[in-house]
Length: 167
Image (spheres, rainbow, N blue to C red):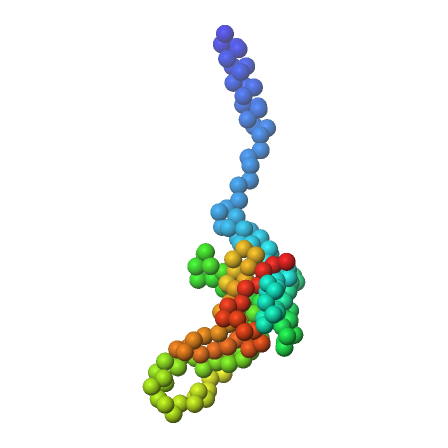
């Protein structure tokens, strides 16, 4: 009986020595790979949905890990670089570089009481980046401000918000 017990222990020992341990990636590696995979899914063509006064096509491409855009509207045909921003893990922003806004006065709330203000005092340089919030296959951006914060990003687009859907 003792020989059978020893023989069984030896077999278990040999079998356990032949099994290779599985490689378990570090948690940080898994998170980084998932983040890269999510970013790679944004490459493609995005368009507005049948809006006559705001036809827009945006193509995002990935070249060697860097992202670029080609934007076509009724008045623009622009190419440039893309970068990504995120303050919150649930919110991601795609930022198109090199697109000058049509109008920008910034915060004008303090000037509303001044009847003589013409809107061009202390002009500010127009921003040159456009941010789009990323939600699955849709990119969205606010195209114009309000009476307190006056701006228009794309004057050729008569919509307050721009929604681009991946095709």
